[in-house]
Image (cartoon, rainbow, N blue to C red; front, side, top):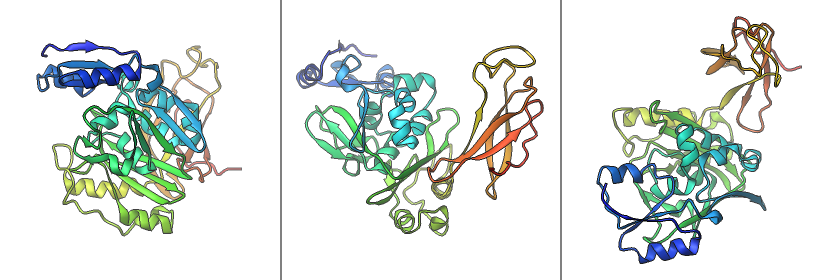
Length: 347
């Protein structure tokens, strides 16, 4: 790593001044791309301007049908925000899929979209929801912001201050992750808005995040997974690497967009002791992970299920689509030796 001047301004105005006065200044948010780049001596900035001390760039607020997320708000804050979970649950779930806990507590939404990694998750959310990027000097629509591989519409001395997300009628994000990095091999964000359906794909394109107009038109006419069953995406402009070929990614796009997004959620009484090892609250140290295929609404879907081998009484599991118009399907599984039977119909 080469020498540089480190600055930590306390206000946005000070950060703007520091960036404009530096010979070759770089902004530091979460640092997940910048710090490794500096360590490998692939960049030699004159100044490193840390934005973490600027309170006005952090926070989440909901007003007028819009969720506004400050640029230095962490992924963990987004996924844990009651405002986001209530208005755009798909956005909260997306943030919870990013990396690991260390990444989610240090990484920021502004840093992610400014870097515009082609396998990052947030560009899909911004393009899928039709978000607006707010900077210190203007507002840029997501359609105009992402220009290509690691390229955005930002000027050299422009600083992202917030992102505005319009609340959709329905939205869902499905991601096929690379197991080690948890980056997207393919991520699909689908949103039903007042202006129609938007479909954004991340992780697959050679030029980064992109929309699929054919799927958008089909889903606008019929908002159902069946609407896109005959639509294919060309692999000519998709990535091929050691993880997946362009052809495989093209196939995954159809799978991810057409997914119903089922989830299993285990609910247990708070503070209750385990009947065997007497640990409270559950889950106890005997918790294990198992995989099974559970038939749901005529489809067989793979889940990761938490089993409590020392819990001798039944516990409830809710199987529900992520889409808000789908009611949960309750099921009961025996706690001692989970057998994963078919869900019991509601009522």
